[in-house]
Image 1 (tube, one colour):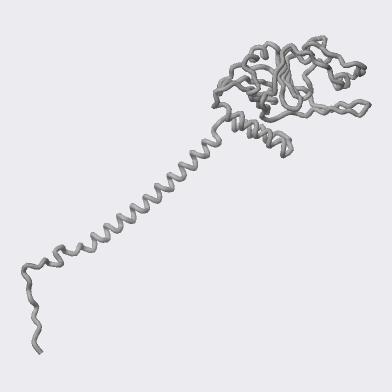
Image 2: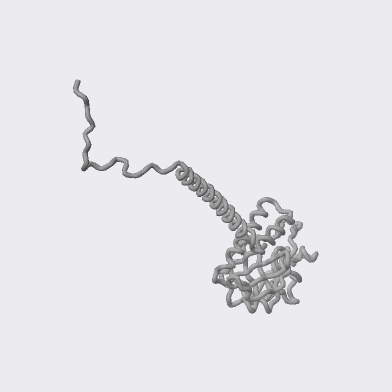
Length: 241
């Protein structure tokens, strides 16, 4: 059998033109890669923590949010009342960034705030009418509950005559007249109508049998309502909390 001989090809390239890197260099590269991966994970964890802290700060930092949570924790409310209370407060906060006039009534502080966006254009004291139920011997009954929530103004009246309802006399402990009685400015010179018969009104005149705020409604000094009056329309929002 003929002997095989290796034929040299001077013109062919050497398949091992580069020497194999030493073992220590391979280990060094591997260690650097592992260290980089570890640092990347640590950095990612740091970013995640910073993001979570930022979100938490944005959710809890506004003083108004903190005050709302503290006040809500002290209130004894039904679930439905709590939802209305929370909704009106959050919508009120959202309105602080708007470019429109709106009213906010804080029943805890007895304050009415007339806002333009986040700026308070006027602040006025407000007297909240005591809720109650009044009934007649004939079986008629009128109930006035505390009003909370976010509403649109239903209308406004200036210098309107008021037909005094029976519940006013019942509340005063007086006999109901046989004929309805109409009193000029009976609810006050300025009356802002809210849903379900509730109102924001100025003080009634001495001739009116209503000597205090309408039950469940809100009485504001006449000079304050006069100043706000031109800016009040059926598009004005009212937040009561």
